Length: 413
Image (cartoon, rainbow, N blue to C red):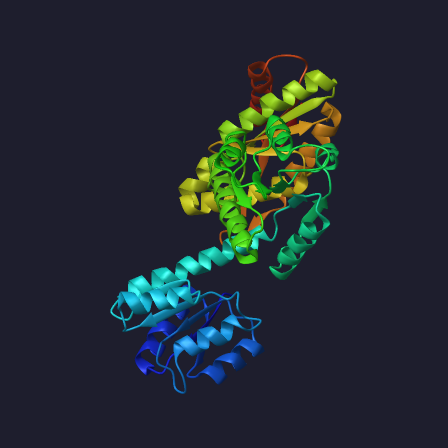
């Protein structure tokens, strides 16, 4: 849970911030003075510090200076105060605070500010899951970056001494940090090769060269950012975090564009694109490819008798059951309404039929306790035989219709 330390002498603002934290699901800790604040920081993990200026035994400025010279210096500090002069605001920002909020602000402004930092923390947690590659022939610079990532709690970092080692690696990364002057090749060549492969990763160039033409050219060939050496550790990490944030948010948007909202499966458009890709792979490597068309039996009756919310629960449960029954590399999409399309790469008709029967039996065993709705599916299974996509789907649909006509809750091949 996101944890906030609030340092304040006013009971009114203590109650206000505590209520906001409760509403947004943040853990609230309270202190009135500098010593109590440090004791809280020692006793538990704190993600954000909110402080007033006037404290019980000192000032907020004293607290900030103490934090800046402590193991807690990376915790963001927000000042909430009734003092609103430009001079004082500038002085506070010069100490390294991340925000300055007037006590004249309404509850919503304070709430919005706290929520923004909670979202940033969530992004940073996701950043810790990203895979990062550092390519730098300087042993000292690699050591410095290793220390930065270790102290920031970012574990998935691998280091390369040469551009050739990185390019010949079969590994893919989310973020690349590439020195522009390597012993075996220039960094721009590495960047171009990564982009030629179709990599959409974040690429950050690092160099002691700071000429605007060099920077402009590096950005034009595909780098997302350019950081000049020598770099400030905190600034380097901030630039990496900013690029990582954009990368994560862009991937989330892309994921939303291909996902069915109700079932979290692929939507129809993306499922069709994946089927086209798998057909091309099957042609190229001469591997078998099979598909299933699955339809929920008596779905209209479920909606009519138990309501559309129950119908939604049925679709989600069946989607979950299908996914759990199949292999990780099988592709499942919601094809429309109560229909699902399953793509089985490198799978013969016999193996596909066996998988379909497992799906059918697993769905049949599902029970929705609320209304005790009996569930079943009908499935049409076929193997691609060289026809185009349209004919493959027509055959799967024909077999599905046959399963329906022959009594439902069955698989036809």
